[in-house]
Image: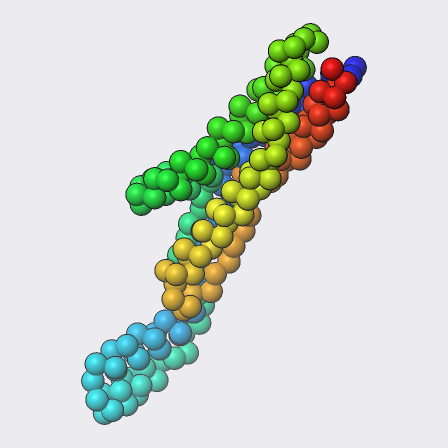
Length: 202
């Protein structure tokens, strides 16, 4: 019974990690008002001409009702998972960042959980004691998972803001991957606390 809780926590964390990495973490959608788009277009064209050209364009805009257009059009849309962000970073030749994100959000969590599972299944021994020390050392990096998610959300939002130039109204929505990854973090933290308690008793 003493081992049941940590083993169940580890298995649930592993099960949540896969969709947490592959499912969308954040979806961004940008919409622009049609009348604002028409006005911006006219102003950009007018900047190339003189004052008379600007007045003529404004008259034409009013005549054709371009300043009274209603509704919005979708101008920007991006959905990314952690793995998708790693691929995008690599595609943009940000290899170091891509490797670091993959390492701290995929490799380290997987290795740590598998080591914890082995620890729970081993009988008391010197090897188990050393493994417990290693796991406790790795647990110091547990908040890196959360930090990586925060970086990805910031990266996507900042990238979108840079591309829109303030003209587009952005709407961000957290995806399923964010909630799966949050669930993984909670169960991983619970498993780590069980392992620390057990390691001290060896």
